[in-house]
Length: 232
Image (cartoon, rainbow, N blue to C red):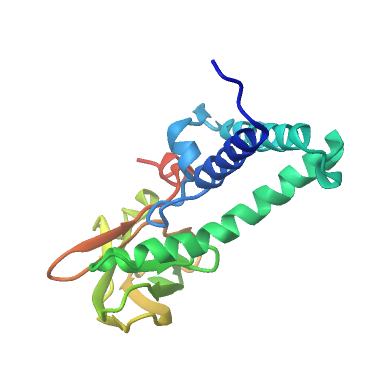
């Protein structure tokens, strides 16, 4: 077999970095990065071990090592510099992937064109002063060129099913997001009155959202840990 040229080896290294970049991305509809879906975490009753990160670190480091071997580069010349470069790339890749996700969501014509910024969005179920309420905010972007209209359902945590009997809480308001619009949806709604004493309180995170209308729906799932610790 003919030995690969330096140029071909360099291309393979950049392809390897590209694969690591994709592995560190997600679909936005699920927060789990692709590599964690391929290499499932090891979990016990009260713990989860994500070993897939070591695969990414090893993959990026090896690609940088081979690139330096092909042509010496002062930025990745020593092991410590390659390790630092690996960590920097692992920090940069997710930020770049956000833009990629919004681009490919722009090709959808349905509610899957909606992008939710999970880092700054939240939804909490609260109990106190004899009432159960929900409050939070969703930062969303309509990535395509069509106006989207929808309602929102939020999954009820299993631990509070004694108060809220439904699997999902449906918000009454209809939301409209125009083409390429960034919008912040604020939620503050009393769900029911319990009549219990003020000593009975909690605050539980909502982790699964469903956007829906008469034609279709888009599900934004929680993480593996969210479902694991959602007591059934």
